[in-house]
Image (tube, rainbow, N blue to C red):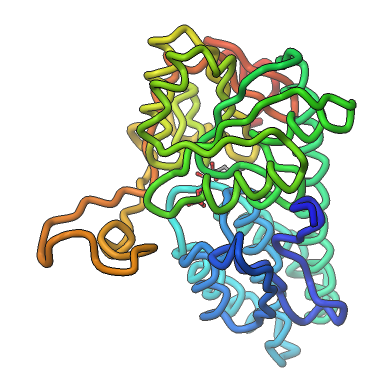
Length: 355
Ligand code: MRU
């Protein structure tokens, strides 16, 4: 089994259900869920059954399609009102990854542009096509990121990654891990990947380590607090991480702990790269201070994964799911349109991002 053969978010053959791989069960169980109600799709995104910024975008696009196609009406007015209500609901499932609202806005644009041109059945088909396009484009985007990132690698490199920005976080291939898949395709067998376990939800241990190991990569799992000694021992040549939202100045939000890795990388003189599709770049936000940070339930820190509770009852818990890394710590941002180097605002402009 190779994680690349798994599908994060697709449609059922009859196109009536969203099918997602339940990532909360990995690496122990590979189970797909068939979803069609607004509540079940919202819950799957909120609970991280489907997660990773681009995969959330694909799931939301298919989600709004399968939800709205169930509405029996000939009235476009009624259909559009229902679409907007359910779009807003899905958009409330997670706040930080901009791909969620990006994908839903792209679906709404299709609605707006065809309101007076299409019948309701035609509109439903058109929305389905758009969701397919979002998924297919995401695969092509990840391939491009992989090719650009591969150009940064040298034989024998040790690569540190945080959280999971691999095939499980996208429609296929991933962002931060895509260069490693491209290296494998080119016959490279000597890369070493270090996965931070990524407390509290363990995306590094459960997902990245699983992905890399099943792909046949030399994979080492470390606890988050082992990154420093691993760097100090000279085992890391480059850091690749993903992003949930990149601001116009290059500040970016990613899984909690990422900013600490960036600070360590700067201290040890290790290049630190962010890999993200251009859909993750939010030019409407001038800096990372404006990125909304998701706060999650205390139980994820005190109880989850443990046989017994591991913290005193009633203790205050702080559980931000993401942090923002300052652009000054970023060597480059690997996008599907090329690698952006500082100053990032100018680089994004030159790439035509946000136009
Ligand atoms: O909470 P998660 O698991 O959705 O967080 C995922 C990340 O932080 C990823 O690094 C990011 O979404 C990029 S995925 C290509």
